Amino acid sequence: MAVVGSYFTGSPIMGILLAMLVGILISAIHSLLTITFGAKQAVSSMALVLLADGLAGVGVQAFFKTKGTTPTVMNLPGSPLFAHIPVIGNFMAGLSPFVYIGFGVLIGEIFLFKYTKFGFHISVVGENPTMAESAGLNVHAIRWISVLSSGMLGGLGGAMLSIGQMNLYQDGMIAGRGYLALGAVSMGRWNPLYVYGSSMLFGLFDALQLWLQTIPSNPIPAEFIQMLPYVAIVCILAISSRNIKYFGITSAGVPFTKYVSER
Image 1 (cartoon, one colour):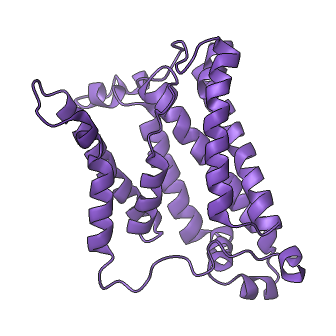
Image 2 (cartoon, helix red, strand yellow):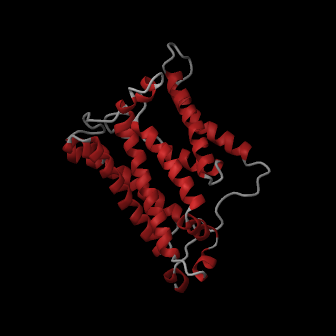
Image 3 (cartoon, one colour):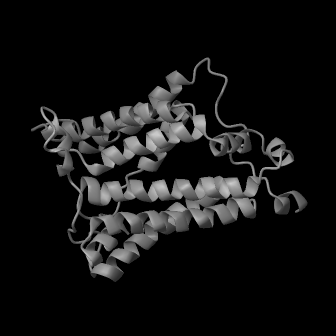
């Protein structure tokens, strides 16, 4: 949808906004199924992943009359606003604006969870929704807001791939990065700063596999090289999980609504 927005409006900013809006809509379906009606998160999320993947393929043909790949569109490959900064200006200007958006999201999340009442409410609802409800918090509403926010950020991540790193959409370009994100959250112990560091580590392995594929006459098949980030996450999680008793948010994924309780 980021590519669709950029293609029809000529503005990558509109593409980003459209991608975030669609992310919110998809997460609203997930919220309705899991928070309101108490469906299993794993089932709902997998169904929505398959649905979105199929809709993307159909959408490419519907909007662009092509199969598998869209035409090139206006994108955001760099940040020219930083070009005039002495010494490091050229380096900063060469980075995608999504890099700075990512830092902004990190700072915002740290501030939210450390210094705001609403961030504390999110944590309480995740750990002990019964106690949160007894304290007068609206568990249903807080979980809805949290999931919708995650959908918005998911749409932003998709826009980064399609009109940040590249200037088109291609079937399969996500390549399971959402599962890497899950691994980063687990490795980072649900702490925004640690999760960000884990994501950077997995990004390093992803960049490494891309670089290895450019080596001339490399005897290792490309399919094995592409496995590198995923093998790395399995190994790192196996090592980091040893002798650690805390493995997540206590009530994460557990439905808690009046409807589910009475059912």
